Image (cartoon, rainbow, N blue to C red; front, side):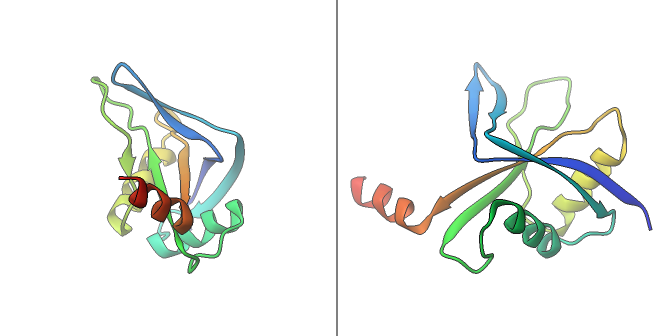
Length: 116
């Protein structure tokens, strides 16, 4: 079974520098998963890394920068096809990209909604 190695960055924020996006991270972890990993397994793995219960109230986002000739926004990982694409990119050592995690608690979501 093929294994794919990648880095998970978390406790950070996305920064837009004139159309070029970068993730400023507080923490990082190395991960190795089978190439056939599903979205639910990836989400469970990421939740374990950041210390979050997958059924907790909040929103977790997984994104990565795709190496392209033109600057494009980070790609969200939201389903099995996105996971396959991300893992395929990271299987090639010339195109590796970290998986960047942001978490917004339900409290923060409600607070932002009430301020709008």
